[in-house]
Length: 228
Image (cartoon, rainbow, N blue to C red; front, side):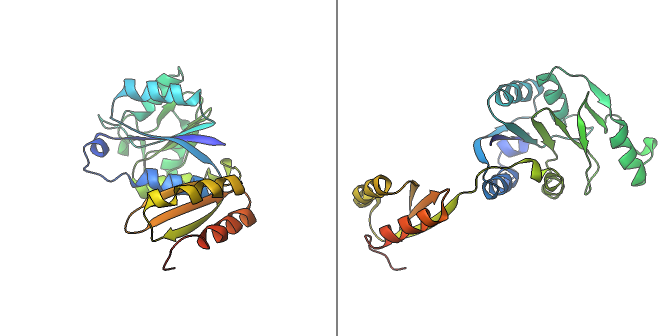
C-alpha cells in the first residue's frame, strides 16, 4: 500500500509552525509497512488543495490530508477536497449528533462546523470540535496534533502493508570510501541501502526479511571501521 501525505497551512510554509504532523504520520505508516511516496505542504488555498488531492488520489492508494478544518475564513480544506471529488458540502447529521452529545447546541457552533463533502464518512473528533472525513481514498484530519493523532488511531487499521526491518551500521570513514563495500553489499544481499554522513556515516539497511537485514548488517560491520 502506498500513500501521499498532504499538510495544509500558511503557517507551515512560513516556518512559524513545525510540520510535526507529517513526521508523525510517516512514522505510523512505516511501522505498518505502508510506503509514503509523497509529503506535500500546501497553502490555505482551495484551488491548490483540489488540484493536488485530485492528482494524488489517482496515483496513490490513499491520500491523507491534515490541517485547515473548521468554520473560519482560512479553514478551506474540506472545500478543496469536495472540489477535487466533485462533491458539494453539506451538513453531516452524524457529526452534528456527536457534538450534541458532547454538549454543543446548534447555537454554540459556528455555521459550517459540521459541513462535510456529500457522501463522506464522518470521523469523530474526540479531542476537539471539527470533524474529519473519509471520502473514497481521501482521509481528512485536523491540523492540531493531538486531534490529528487521536483521529488517525480510529482509522489506523485501514492502512496495511509489508513491514520492513531496519538495521543501522555506523562507519568512522568518509562516505566516498564506503562506495565499493556498499555496492558489494547490495550485490550480496536483497536489501535497500541508504548512507547518511555526519560526524560518522550511518548506513541504513532495510529488508522485508528480518534475518536478511541482520545478516547484511553483520556482513558490513565486519568490513568497516567503527567505534560501535
